Image (cartoon, rainbow, N blue to C red; front, top):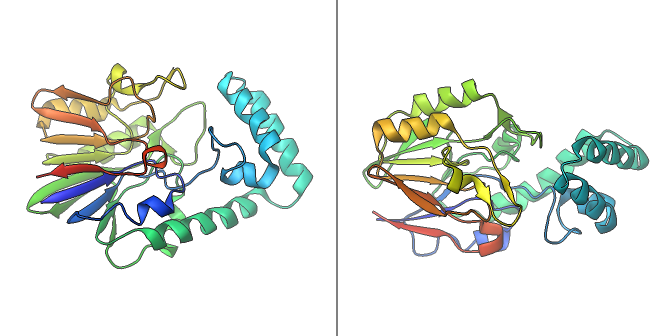
Amino acid sequence: MRVHVVSDVHGRADALARAGDGADALICLGDLLLFVDYDDHSQGIFGELFGAEEATRFIGLRTQGRFEEARELSATLWAAIGGEPREHIERMVREQYARIFAAMPTPTYLTYGNVDLPALWPEFTRDGHHVLDGQTAEIGGLTFGFVGGGLRTRYRTPNEVDDEEYARKVEAVGAVDVLCCHIPPAVPGLLYDVVARRFERGSEATLEAIRRTQPRYALFGHVHQPLAARTRIGRTECVNVGHFRGRGRPFALDL
């Protein structure tokens, strides 16, 4: 049984169409959308709406931790183009989702990332796309658990939830053979991004569940350039499956 796993797709529909080649199933751990591209500032919803120059200013403010100024810049730009920001965003999100879900092979088992808009997914999923969050699925005779979304941060990404809600989803999954989350467990080496030079938030609830139930694997993404891509907690192999937008290839798991 071979399963391919991707996370942080961020618009890479071209590579996603090939991600299931040679596998019995594909698992996608979320962040399908590209709001801001930190490498090519002309790409993503922000860059397409406001241009690369304004995206560069916005990214610079966020990188420096000047989030209030970044929000003020964003508000000024939205006012200049008129209309409701939500309408503009949802139109462009739908355009991205249409391309991404059309490219997604079947079967795919997927959960949400912190930048996704879960309410829109039912418009684009098709037969063979299994969306799971706080739920399990049997794949090749093994039980896979799925926990989507992220925790609250100063970045205020669209699909962040309170720690208590996230912990309830982890608890609902229970003991599984493979635990699949968008964000890592709260292990410092797994959370530090060596390029962005910052710690992302990880889940204490996930860490405790791994220690308690000892799944064979814990798979996740979210941190694009982690200090440590994998570690072991007891018998559990914890693996960051990689930044799919940058890598363009899946993590292969042979079971």
